[in-house]
Image (tube, rainbow, N blue to C red; front, side, top):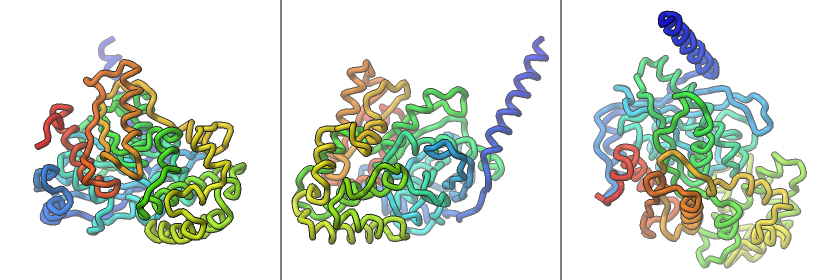
Length: 416
């Protein structure tokens, strides 16, 4: 009987391994970061109290193509990046979900190791230098997938990350680089909410492959129909903030008008903005160029203190009231991810007074979790000072996530 049980377990393991491997389509080399280059870039990006220990290992950058499915359940082939220390990753696999971009060229799988200050570079230098293999999906509609990214639908986009876990481990095996069994989840901005969703969905999965050791969602818009919607229509005297808000609102309109037939841009944006949106998205422009062009259009319609005048009265009211009879607000509501009860140890990191993703998103998530009985032994938060903003907060947030993964809550209890 014992012999039979042993043989059965071995067969099951083999079948499981083959099932995981079958989702891996291809593996390609993007480049190698030398130890010297890594130390120089770490010193530039992670400074002061957020400095990280110097790394002595080179990091291999591997592009992966793998099988997944889109929001309609159709099979797709997606792409992403695996950043893996050449000497092995004993601490396991860190799933990193990236923030908002409409620029396909900023997808993680397109990065070949150049010095560009991107999230992909920062996540690699923060985590892969600490003994973690970092797996970064491009998402639907980015990287090699020709569709339109379903922004900002975390319940949809988390699947891209979950489905990459098995292929990433198989790719590491092909490269003969050992990766520890643990799984960690983190991400910033849009990716913070996707990380929250991924953790929530992974808790429902069976098997060691999907068991999350800890999660660190960073500055995410978890409360899309509350804090995030209110931030969209709030006032500001800062032109860069208003430009970013118009970009985010337009991106929502663009992606939902493509992926939901009933959503028409003219029902949500004034004619000037509605006509501009298809001209700037989907044409290979950088995010900076998209923001600039939309900002110029916004000035024409009077977005000096708020983007309200770029929106139709219907859309403004629907955002303010959280009116789920509206098609866009209904989809945003379905992707709220703050009012639930995680079992995974979780550190929520945010930037104080963040004007782009309000820190109320994190406050509301932690309050909702406390109301559901989640104690500080399971979920805590870490607030970065207002000397950072949503963009400059990426490296320090990643540094905090690394300390949390390395040492748990005790690792971030006191600032170094």
